[in-house]
Image (tube, one colour):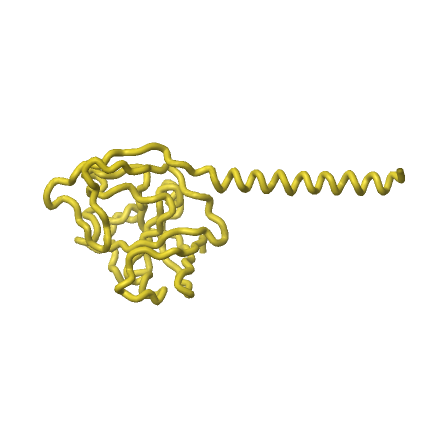
Length: 192
């Protein structure tokens, strides 16, 4: 066999191996985020859970998955958009984690699931959100805690899912979603 043909065949085999190896690594990487455990809900004390803006309160005996991670962030990361008020008296008493402030519901702001929040590394940075045929740029101001919940420190709310972007009313408006539908919306997002 000609050495040129043998070299070409060898390179093709190596190239195919690299493609298969990279696909395998990508598949393992995208599936690497699994539940890190569970917690069992307890009913909140009377008046201690604010269920504004479609927020849920923990249910007695309900088992909730918790996550320390989220899927990797890609150019079009799939997520679920939910509604949150960051204003004083909104969804919860504490101010936003990133800057210790309350924010007006007219600001284009979001909270990200624990893994995407990445221990505050996305604080005060912008993300692009695509949904409902539109696009909006919003600032990360808080964490949607997916690693715990159902206690006073978490306003007696269940853990956030690991694929959640909680957004202000302004984000929902900018995406052109009818106010009667502000609950949950499948979106894609990326770092801006």
